[in-house]
Amino acid sequence: MIVNSTDGGNIVLKGSSLVLAIAAMALLVMPKAGLAANSAPAIVAFDAAFAKVTDCTYKLHAHEVLGSATQDRVYDYSFMKPHFAKTLIESGDGKGSGGVWSGGDTVSGHQGGFLSGIHLTVSLNDHRATSLRGYTIPDGLMQNIVATYANTPGKLSQSPGGKIAGVDTDRLVLDVTDPSSDGGVSKKILYLSQTTHFPMREIMYAGAQVVLDQSITDIKTNVGLTQGDF
Image (cartoon, rainbow, N blue to C red; front, side, top):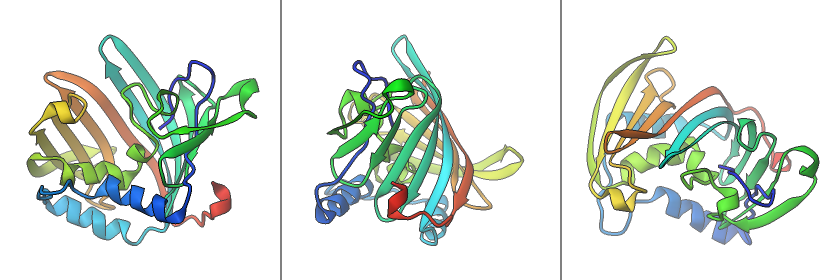
C-alpha cells in the first residue's frame, strides 16, 4: 500500500534478484518457525480458488485509524504471480500516487499531480511507502490478507457471515494471542465469498476500537497481465 509522503515520494518496490524476491514473498505467507498454522475450511477453499489465478485486478477500499488520525483511500490493485504488484490511489489522501512492488524489500513509486514523473525507490517499510498504520503494498494482496489468519497465533473460528452485496459469505474471527506483535490488533474478522472464496471485507480491532475496515470489490481474475504492466 502507498501512504502519505512528507516530500512527495510515494513509492514502488523493486527486487534486486529473483531469488531474493521469491524468498521475500515466502516470508510473507509462511508461519513463523515453531508455530502451527491455523486451519479453517474457508482458508482451504480460498487457497484452492487462488491456485487457479495467474493475475488479477481489484479495488481496495480502506479506512484506517491510528490514535486520533484517520485515513480513507481507494486503491486500484494489479497482481501477477509470482510477486508483481502495482497500486494506484484512486481517491483519498495521496490521490494519483502509485507504487510497484516486484518482490524483495524495496518499492518504487511516484506522487500524484505535477510530481507524477518523479520516481523514488525506498525500503518496503519506509513511511513514504506505507499507509497510516504502516501497511505495505504486499499487505494489501488478497493472498497475504488471508494468510494472516492462517499464520497469526491466536484462536480462529469460522461461521456463516451473512450476505455482503447480496453474496453469502463465510466469516473468520481471529482472536490474536499477542496484540503487541500485530500492531496492537486484538481481533481480526474476515468475510469471504461462498461463491468465489475471495475476501470481501476485513475489520480489525484494537480492544473495542475499529482500527481497520477495508473492502475488496471489482475483482477480475486472469485478465492477461504481463510483466510490462508493472
